[in-house]
Image (cartoon, rainbow, N blue to C red; front, side):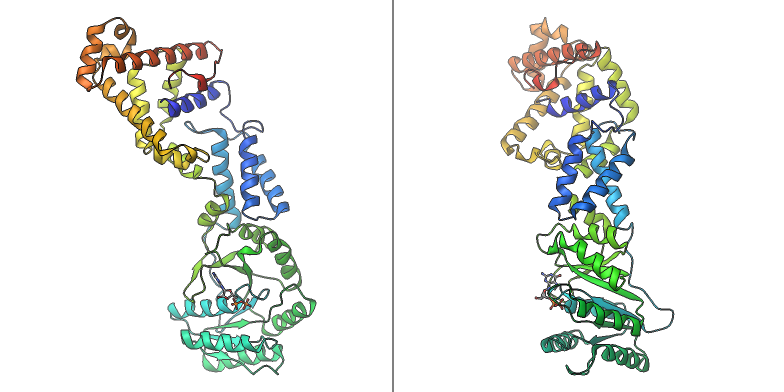
Length: 443
Ligand code: GDP
């Protein structure tokens, strides 16, 4: 019944023992969890290693907030660092000083490059900017048709010279045509291959040299996983990219590719694709992606809630009381209310990884028990709250409390008994021996 309280005391105890700073040893488990979460999210192994080592080092010596464990706080630090690395705010599409802005799309076949071209064009149109799409994939005749169909759908013109023309020439003429038409942004769709291919790279490099794009966006399928790192590196070295679009985020992928792309190329993810429809494009939000990549219950919300709810001065007073074994029913009530402010036990449990295995029944029992305790404590006089001993020796007081709170005398006895045992343990803790809160009887 006092699990959450015990955890809080547990961290208070750690603090007494000098565990109020993040150290190598008190975040070992969290480090492992973070590493696993990043790998499961398909962040490249090398990126994971470097990133975790850096953040771990940075975090050393950080002061731990009251009410959370060093490991939990570390996860929050990792999250914030992820946000920082992936770019603290959204980086929009480049805008040329004088129109047209030229955007070059690059990427492997099947990643969603053509779809992303149309999505971007629609996005611009919604901002009242005119767009022209240029079809340079002459190797797959269907690709030109695909772009034309999409163009009709979103009412954006497509420039093409059929499938016999040279892609570099198509791109060059496309840009010239855009100038004559006063188009705001030209988006050049290019050919992709199933795998990285030197001919493809060479062609892309030539197109880039001729049209001098303001933005070169690498389109990466979020499901690419570990490969995203090599892919980014190759494209960046051979072509040079200024941004990326991560597609198919509507699938199961946790989006770890976003971190790999950013770390390896330094280029920001500008948009994400979240569906097959042309409307399914969103600006990239580092905050959301960081939470998705970590996917660790929601420790972060928990830490934030603790930050809001747990008053440091209060915590220190509480510790002092624990040291002196003066923790009484009033303090207990305060702790219970604090937990209530943080949400129901069920809500809290959902936020803690691993805790969601606790059955609904157990949670409800725990909450019921807390409510019962609260009702009984509310029926106590100030003196009784301070000195549970007077209750142990007075059946008439117990009867009064039982009646007042709508519980049985036995319930009151149990509460008093549990509380006394807990105080006994606190006393031992205060004297320096630590019997282990987990074994607290009846809690
Ligand atoms: P390209 O070869 O890179 O030009 O790829 P396409 O644009 O032809 O897209 C390949 C497939 O992926 C098509 O079936 C698209 O409908 C699909 N696709 C593209 N973007 C997304 C996305 O964000 N989510 C989902 N679920 N499918 C997408």
